[in-house]
Amino acid sequence: MLSKEQINAFWDNIFHREDDPSKRDILNILAHIPLFSKLSRGELKKVAKIIHERHYAAGESLFRMGEPGAAMFIVKAGQVDIVMPKEDSNGLILASLGPGSFLGELALLDDSPRSASAVAPKDTVAMAFFRADLNKLIETEAHIGSKILKELALIIGQRLKLTNEQLYSTPKPAASGS
Amino acid sequence: MKREIGKSRLKRRIWVYSVASVLGLALAFSLLWALRELLLPSIVGALGAYLCRPILNRLKRMGMSNLWSIVLLFAGFFLVILLATMQLKSVIPDQKGKLELRVRIQYKLTEQYNDLMGLKNGAKGNLVFEMFGGEVQPFMDKLNNMIMLSPDERRDFVRLYVYAYGNQMVDQKYFEYFLRNVDHDKRRLGKQYVGEQETNPEKIPPKELLLRQPNQGNPDNMLARVGNVISLWLASPFVFLFLLIDEGEIKKNLVTLVPNRYFEMVLTVIDNVDQSIGKYLRGTLIECSLVGLTFVVCLFLIGIEFRWAMVIGIVAGIANAIPFLGPAIGLVVGLGYTLVVEQFSPLLPFVDAHNMIFWVLATVAIAQGLDNAVFQPVVLGSAVSLHPLVVVIGVMGGSILLGFAGMLFAIPAIVVSKVIVTTLFKEMKAYRII
Image (cartoon, rainbow over all chains, first blue to last red; front, side, top):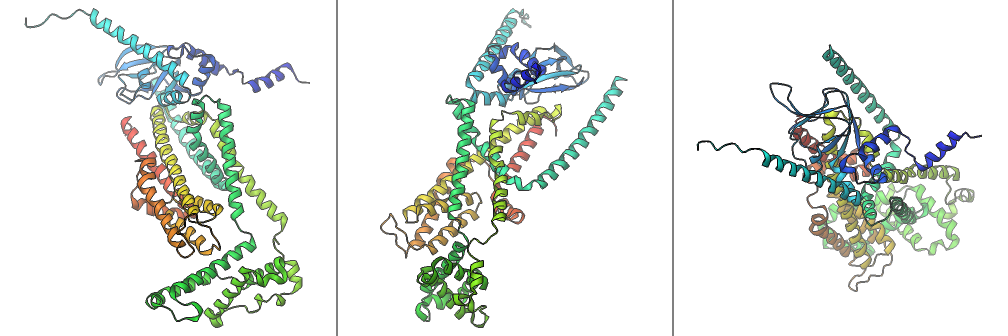
């Protein structure tokens, strides 16, 4: 006689219920990333399939300043520092990002060089979303691709507004030599 | 202290990676060698899936579900393989057919040669024979020696005809060709001609006649052989199906093996290589298909039976993937068929049996002209270019290593290696690794 667990496992195998906690974690994290906030559960699963999970040891770089960008990273566990490298010291830490944060999203648009480095100060797990995979998603699942691109445009627009506001609110230095 | 731990961990990691890589590579190569018979069916399936991927994407864009798109493509792939196998099976001759084909080729070759050289009915030869006969005759003799049936084959031929036609075999056209070939060979070889009695059915013991009838192969062995081939080629549709179903899981699992430092670079290389190779392979497939189609249309127009026009078209199309040699293979197959064809009904009024060879030459010229002027520039564009010397050495090397399959896959293999190496170096520089 089959037990209830065995019967459940049988149906789960048929309907592919997401019982893997790590996969459930990935879906939960992705759902809270603004870029994917408009995606349904089913659409998030499709994105999760093309996400690469990477494990970084303390002190390891996710990417280096000046290198071509190819992927956006999402911090799953641990911490990532955005660092402006300096030759004579460890570099200037611009920001520290915790779980659920994302970085390097401009790499989803083109391969222009990274404007800063990203370093894991402690053992970290990050998820990488690759530009070429996004481009393929736009080709094959245009509705998912367009939702992601729209959110990306909104994020970049908001940052531009913020930068403009900061620029205008900064007091202008007095003209020298007058 | 922490730095010391970090260093020892790094050392251990390097050791583990190195040993695992060596063991993995050794295991992969030994597996590849052990399963080498599965390699070609798997490559065909993988290539089919790779080439069908854009069609799958297009079907999905058109609103078809993933499942139905895959089912449709799988059915299409299966159907193409089935039709191609049936078409090829229908034209592959049995034992009698093979012997007949050689008899026909030898007879027609001799007839055409005698016509051209003015040697018909014991004539002494024309001007062409006087000018070139000395050089061409030894070549013709060698060719005849290659095609002519051996004493055993001659005995089999007579036996098969006795079995198929009985006393009426002497009225059969190909038996007449056979007798004329035997006469010709006797005259040509003189005392060197081996085997006198095998053409006379009365000299063949009746017991042997009964024992050695057509299809005398052991049915169990034949079934086992056919079963073996079928089971090997079953891998092809399965590889096709599972690679088509895969939504990047294979790539993802392979990329997990890449160290973090090279992760972004490797993904970029894979993407660039995929794009370049995809463009080249799809372009080559379309180009070869168009060349094959040109052959089929032209050969059908000049009167070659549609079934044979298809076969010659398929051979010429596939051979077109071999630079330089491909058109020659198409030409030889076309001319070979023209040589042995008995009856044809041309759709064009100015084509007849005497100028057929020139129309086959014209077909090859048209196909090559269109290929160079239209198909290659439009379909392939500037996908990947190779130096002609690399092409020649590659094709020769491929043929030495793996025969015809080597010749066919040499250039794609070189193109793939070239794209991987150039992209890898470019990205390694961009990521400041070298």
